[in-house]
Length: 272
Image 1 (cartoon, rainbow, N blue to C red):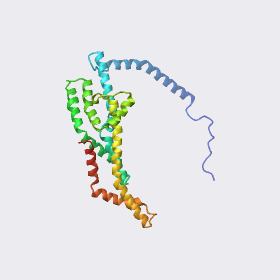
Image 2 (image 1 turned 120 degrees about the vertical axis):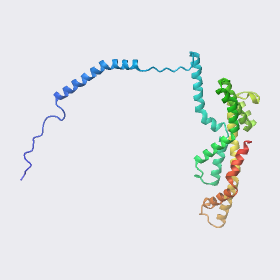
Image 3 (image 1 turned 180 degrees about the vertical axis):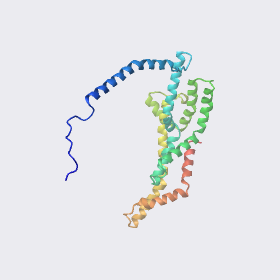
Image 4 (image 1 turned 90 degrees about the vertical axis):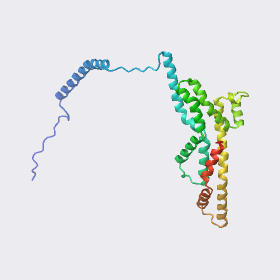
């Protein structure tokens, strides 16, 4: 027996609201839109009139505003170029490359990590560049903050110690090479432009770092050669030499206090 009762006939009306209800909703939305368009502009105008005005004046005249704006743009440009200046116009380039060669020579790709190498190179750079930074602070930054020199004079005084440092570490052949590329003739050292000194310094640093890296590789290369020759003589040709030579290279590096020697060599190579 079926106790479910008679089944209702399916409704032929479409799903959703009736046309009458949809018409009332449309009229309601039209009313609110008209009300908003009529009231909102006046309310917004009253709020704009009541809101406090904010004006920024960087100088007493239009010429002063333009000069201040140019100084702000120059300061932002220097801040943008600060990482490049730190990496390429200081001792950072040589230090980080030599540290990378040390890790590759030992054969350990993950220890020390890139963060540790970059951090150590950064702090060694601060240590080496401390006298240059002190001269920049005493000759350029402090007088400029005291408003005793102009911005152009501060820039010239700040670039002088950095230029002297780069010229001290740059080979004369590199300077002559970039002077020839720039089309300049023989130029005095004091009159060398920064766009010649900077690339000459970078190329010279790369050359010096690779020379130091070659010297770092020699003792570890000897260890690899001895281990591979021993394994070959013992007939253990299937044994990877790196598995045997790595502990010996680590032991050699620890016994000679390798990090002390590397850091000392790097610092002394800059004449500090």
